[in-house]
Length: 164
Image 1: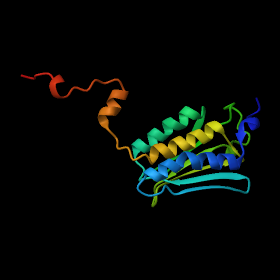
Image 2 (image 1 turned 180 degrees about the vertical axis):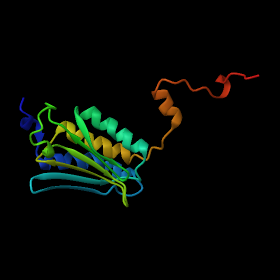
Image 3 (image 1 turned 60 degrees about the vertical axis):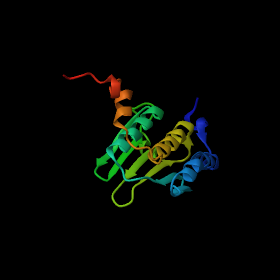
Image 4 (image 1 turned 90 degrees about the vertical axis):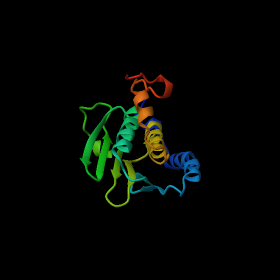
């Protein structure tokens, strides 16, 4: 199957992202600033995010890896983190700068910007939606939940051993 056969037209992609994130805007305290545009052959999605933390960044990286097989880190500097998808053949670097690029900015106002030359694939759209949802979900980091995800057993209340 040709990669270009699986690309979603811009109008469909825009509708899909907006409809998926409309519930998020309704449930958030304020609307999530979202811009989706296609200019000079480049798809650009920009969304506001809360102040960037290590947890948000690494959770987002986990989402990216779930949807996009091969990625590279372009920037990992305080205030700007950038990831880009590689070609299906990682040794082929032809037109690599045209691939999906996800930037996290947190210098003044925190936002995420996703760019790609041309249209996005369904997996790329899914990753964008999931990242924006996850980042703006308002869920606070719960250490107990994270430890349980890692396989730890949490003892509290009557479960705790008597140290005497």
